[in-house]
Length: 137
Image (cartoon, rainbow, N blue to C red):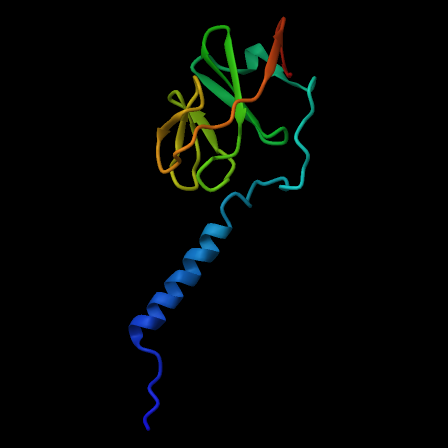
């Protein structure tokens, strides 16, 4: 009886799968302040209206929210967690909220998917704008 070791193909497949798993598991850890943090409560001031650019937005990592201003004086808020693989979104530019993990993009107007692989929109967060203050509602 001859004992044959693993084939080159099976070693390559196993090694690739392990590397892929490790790489995917590390997304979002770099700047993550801890997934155990509690989301900010209602009434928490996020920003001044002047802090949010028209046609753009700002990510509030600790509060787990993104605030956007699609049109002058119109403010929206969404969760900062991508619906594809739960990575925190990384930036807001060119009318979209962007996740660097796998390239998903979401509209600053309504959180809808502007570019896959995500298939679900970002969840909307309630905010209140009073004077020049933006607070969680």
